[in-house]
Amino acid sequence: MSKKVLVVDDEKLIVKGIKFSLVQDDMEVDCAYDGEEALEMAKKTEYDVILLDVMLPKLDGFEVCQRIRDFSNMPIIMLTAKGDDMDKILGLEYGADDYITKPFNILEVKARIKAIIRRSHRQAVEEEKKKIFEKNGMKIDCDSRRVFVDGKEVRLTAKEYDLLELLSFHPNKVYSRENLLNIVWGYDYPGDVRTVDVHIRRLREKIERNPGDPDFIHTKWGVGYYFQD
Image 1 (cartoon, rainbow, N blue to C red):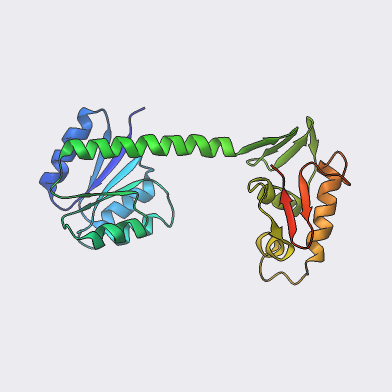
Image 2 (cartoon, rainbow, N blue to C red):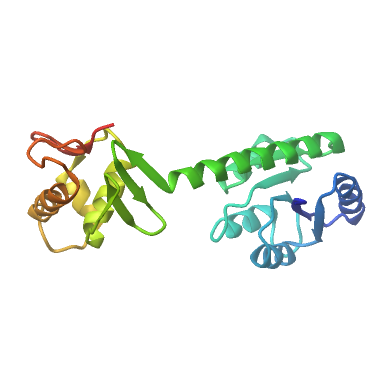
């Protein structure tokens, strides 16, 4: 499947040259010439990479990058005409993945684009793997929020599941009862930390083969709870 790239620059000759070169590598290329147009196109299409100039009419590249980050993690490479390091730093702080300084070699641009696409693909594969967690006979399916122990489904309440997912995806990290209460129930929850203890006890009764000698969720006395790796 060909990769989709959005090239954003108000200098049409630069856009034309980049597009011509990327199309030779079987990439689909859309073009935008100002910040507002780029933002609208990014909302409508999930691109594999956005090549985004800093100096743009209507909205500058930093603002476009920042707004895209409100709704998407699609990779963004900033183009800057200045040798000013501040532009590069600002671009990365606003959520850019990489930057290229003008004047650039088109071969470098293509190499950076391909590197970003490869990295994004690896990350997507890793994220897909993370949706299924398996440990010592327990399986957590994050998409369906279902839990199985030794092949049998265990029915958990929403909060029990949230606790289990949080602890299991951060193995050996000890969470205080206060932290668990704030993360899972929210800072404005009127209950106290005994709520956490009750839910941990019920969770152990459902997922542990021997709740008195747990395999999964352990207590760090005087501190809190953790999932043992």
